[in-house]
Length: 343
Image 1 (cartoon, rainbow, N blue to C red):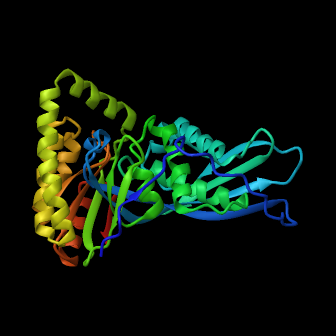
Image 2: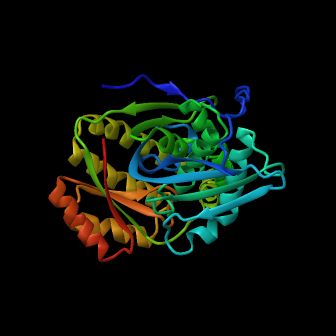
Image 3: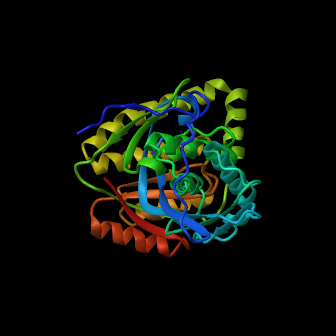
């Protein structure tokens, strides 16, 4: 069954969430709440989704969780972030400034002022922070969930998603909205950016899609790569339009194949999409090598995922036995490899 498409309100297009009375404080000095945001893989549509064409995204089982502690001490103010998330080497250091900016965006959106009250945020969970997995969105959504609960706010999922989108601006400038939507709602989603509010449609698959994904170990800047693609697009519109036309044809068939759980067709289309992304110049040797290893190990198809020029790739498998074989082959070539299922 298919849920009706939904419009996700973006920040700034609607009045801010009304402030609510704070919940009664507990007797202890600190009060806390713990909540999650999920990682994601873009199945089809990275980079092109920025230009208002549909994309398909699947939330992975791994998540970031967050615990927030608000100080009751009158003298306490400021922000402490304890980042205990697993991550590839260098990721947290490279993203530290962006992480703090995104966190402050969420706090500002929810009306929490750290100049007046102290706040400690502790990040954890089993989602390994790596380019392409949506770690920044999972971070922002988990902070929004935990902080709103600790403040006594009862927010809808759309309001949590809105807060996550605001946080993503600290990482990506003008995010597409796809990562925070997957981090908030989970599952498999069709996502389309518009001039107004993004539209998303949840998909319930009849059978689970068995996937292996692996990291190159390279941390890429989404902002820089997106800006570079835009510069190439502006310099040669005909080149970009031809690639987008090929992607649109791939997407149309990929959505049908996903709905039908035709994994062989999904795999073939993933291969085709990877070729387009290579021509878009957002793949790299490390990604291409991992994609080739997965295909040689029996994957039905494989492609890069997310920003590119590093980050992740994913491969779809026929069954659990094939998934284990692809996982084992990728473990020989990549330090970080995971199994997941979309449904």
